[in-house]
Image (cartoon, rainbow, N blue to C red; front, side):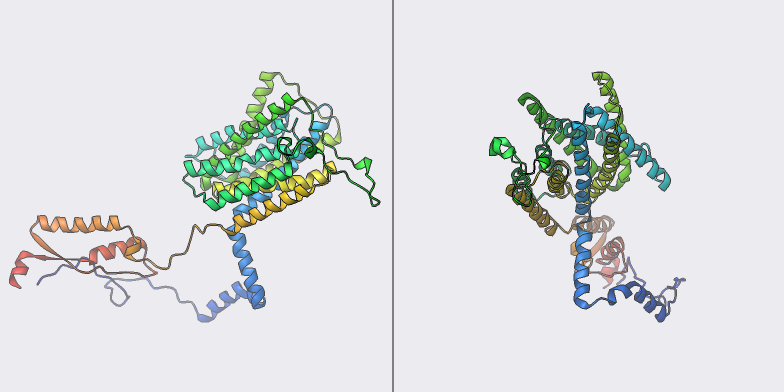
Length: 457
């Protein structure tokens, strides 16, 4: 019986009739020294400490993107405090001018870093994502404009709580547009965090007008310190102004949602500073056009405090955007945006430091809720890149394998060749790629015999 074997594996160098390169010989002591050098620091630790250290490092690695987003919220809170302080200086700084000044510094820093580090295409970004970069910069301008404009008539807490509508919107849009996972647990954590935000902000339409009164500071004898009375320079204007500020804040929410989704869509195809450079450049251009169109009067700095606050806005804004972009590139839109809730924690602390407003019991409770929700989200992170135990035919694409078998059978039958199927063979070897395993398995499961040979047997 003549049989045609379509695949003959070469497993050893002695079986081959051609030169097979051998692996270089590495002495055993050299391998031991390398292992010792890599794990010397870990071996010095006690077993329990080493175990805790390993879990800590694994947790940091698994939630690295989440930590970057959280750190960005600290710097963004510093920017918002500086903007709020500038609004209290006479004359107040126009919103367009604030955005333009901040983004000029951001653009210069981003371009300088990319050119020094040799990042290709520093101005336009890599091909294939340039349209996404343009859209990210355009939509991101409205996100920052809505927030800065609302800070003229809203307190820091109210403006912050309205900005937290963006995480839920981002998670939903990310699930619909990018097909990213947004589990019920993440939605539950987001809603619970929003409850904490409401407890901290205490909007008047829920808690009444008395909720807006911060706790007065007292001295050691329990007497109110008039010199340390709470200051809230942004709470001004008519009810119509406040309503307009809420509307502009919602415009900022839409802009922030679009920016977060676009950053996630770009992913790692572009350097984080490509996104930041496009955002800052288009913000400068758009703010300049709006200044000319609305005939906004430019305010010239006249004091050191003025310049210091502008410097904080520029530098901290640049750092915050870099950390935020890097974090969102490493996290899903839903999980990454949930970390934005930590900004209210930083805002409460900074408001206590700079505006002398002591947090109430509701603020403390809301802070604890937000922190607990953030820890819950980090603890329930989905393991997207799980290690595979091995490669077998069941884990390959069954549809592609059956297509190959049908092609192998159809051709011999058309030529008058009889085919015979044998049981499926499972192949798994760590040194072979998935493509090699597929080819070897497909070619070894079909044996063909001719009709003449079959007749002789």
